[in-house]
Image 1 (cartoon, helix red, strand yellow):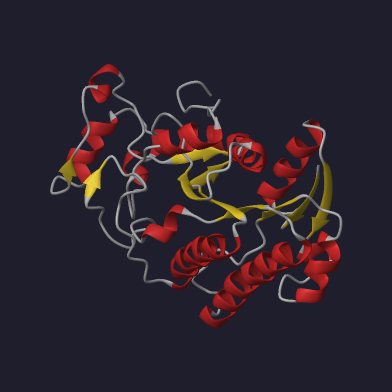
Image 2: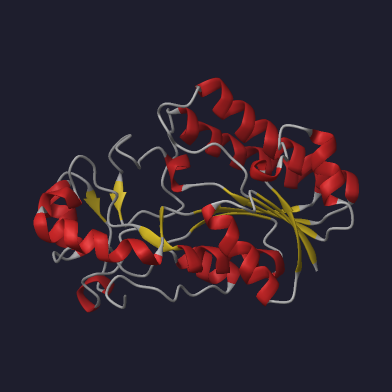
Length: 275
């Protein structure tokens, strides 16, 4: 297949492009670094000519210094241009990068209602980036309902890169409390190579219609305490819904990836304890 990849030269985009090419797909890159503008509908449509699918990653990220109006403009209008391009060109599948921030309980925004966290958790985003990702998911859902075009929205947490792991271990050895201070991300992470694999699978998995899928490693990233111990220590007031699986695997992720596995046929390869 020929795949349009927006944000193709970003840190994640380069891994996605490499895995697409390794799987035998042709890639059409679209990136601000190459002079492309996701806010230009004609440019998006021209790039998508002849494509069979789209992986959409072009976005402004969660930097508090960014202008909130620009975040909304780029993230929502850019996604709209991708969706309308797909409809105009009869491209039947879109994999769109959302974020766990759409839930409004990450990057210190609020405390979760329960552990482990899964897609059933209510979404209550308030910050511009988080809100743009939640509204983007809703746009995809309603677009699929109207057009029948498949939209797979991926919700990665912190996307980690191989070169970062030694530095994290060193920092935690020197200052253990930095693991949860000033904020704790529930030990959730997903290696960039696993994130890219999920995006590629989203193009060819059995049609889910519209799906919102949390991506996470199978285990928590932690300096030593188990997942349950950290949950008790940092958020003792949060309801615990975990079962015997946390007795069998004490470091099991507090962010549930089972739906992504079921829908995509995905299995994360990289774990904190295996790195």
